[in-house]
Every structure is written in C-alpha cells, then in structure tokens.
Image (tube, rainbow, N blue to C red; front, side, top):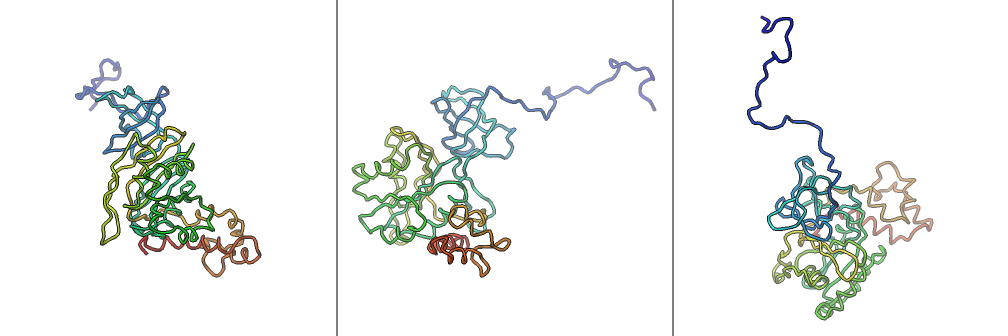
Length: 336
C-alpha cells in the first residue's frame, strides 16, 4: 500500500528527528592544515608530553588515528590548546613517517612487538664490566635490534674500576662499533659524561641497558638539570639491579645539539619481530657475497655463498663469525 500519492513534494516527506542532536557521521576527515609540529617527549597512560615551539604541551591521540600509537621521538602534528598551561590538552592528529624504529618483544615467543623509541640516530648500549656481570647475549640482541631498526650502535662500558674492558671489547672488535669506557670515579667528577657527550652531539640517542649498570646515573650526569631517580642497589643473589626508570623520556643535551632518550631497564630483549635477512645490511663488506646464496638462505648453512666469499679474500673471516653469532642470538635466550 502506497503511503503517499503519485505527486509528492519533498516537503510532504516525513523524516525522523535526530534525538541525540549530533551531526551525522561522515568519512571525510579534517585536514588540519594549521596543525603545529611537535616531538613526543614521554608517554604516560594515554597522555603524551610534546615539545612544541620550545614549550611542553600535554596532548592525547585523536580518535581519527585509530590504533596507531605515538611513541617517544615521534614527530607529530597537534591542534587545540597549545599554550602548555595547566589543565590544557591538545590533540595529536598526525604522526610523521619514522626514519628509524627501536622495537622489542617481551620474549622470543611473544608476537606483539613494542616500539620503544622512534627517529633515534643511534642506540647506546650501556653495560657494566662488573657488579652486575656483563651479558654478551643481551648486548648481541640489542645490536640486532639496532641494525634492524636503522640505528647506529654505541657501546658504553661502565665500572671499569672493577674489571678491565679488554675481553669484552675484543668480542666486538670486528664489528667496528664505537665505544666509551667509564669508571665510577670519572662519573663522579664529570669526565665520563664529557667523553660520552662527544659521541652524542647532534644526534638523538636512545639509552638501553639492564638494571644496575648505571644507565640512569649516566643520563643524570649528561643532563643534570633534569635528574631522574637513580638506580637502586644490585641484588647480591641475582646480580641484577632494581628498575627505577619506568617510562621512556627524551631529554635535551643543552650545551650541544642533541637528545638523550632514557628507557626503562630491561631484563630481556625479545627478537620475535626481527627478520634475520635484514641483519646482513649492517655488514656491507659481506652483503655482496650473498648474491650466490640459495633462496631464503640463513647464512649459516652448508650452501651459503659467504663461505666462498670469505675464502676468496673479499672479507675478514672474523666478520662472518660476528654476523653468524648475531643471527644465532635470535634463537637463544638473552641469559645464555
């Protein structure tokens, strides 16, 4: 049965009122062309502290970004109240493409990867030479994550007054990784911070290390005006320190152009997200030799062309050993 006659007019058609009084949904999103550019300094329970035009602004992620999350180091676009005053809140409406990403998983069986820092230039791997003892497998895992994410590694060895660095440095000598060795006395008088600062000038550097190695103490020496809570004691039974940094935080170096990103202490560094085929990119002297490798070569099997490449004198055998050690570390636990 027809409700209206043949010749109805638009004014005759009844429409249901919008009881909520809100606008109808649309897929057209605003472009936010006037959004201000900023950098994420820290993230705390859904609130992001950003640096915008020299002032810190508290912001939250806009709904239109969906499940895409911003992390420390991200370059973002913000709208809303950008005054930075108390009880104000801006919105992050865009996240720029990242130049590098430091990622980790909780362990090698965890499929969920966590982005720790974005857009960092280098990764400073801080480890103590004693108290607690160095853990080479954990260092190897951090190196793999750095190479995979596009960061240059830097070794920072602390507490050299308790043990010499020679043995550990020899283990990584063939990787040509820059390093800085510090002692507790040098850390106290500022000499250690000065040497480390030379390696950080003009760069964004993420600091990682397991608890008790003096990572946060070193960060405090580098950025004394923004001191973080220092590390607690090292457990005499486990040989491990207590976590005192609970969230990543980017701090400006001040006297030299550059940023330090202090991250929470780690006890494991899962590599479930790592594609082993990308690690070879960190070995430019070996990479041409992979042209003769079989498809999906693990670079640690009888048919790998890298053995012949090294035998022919194109690269140092120690470099091939280092590559295979790093690739194998994905199959081991970091405590091995």
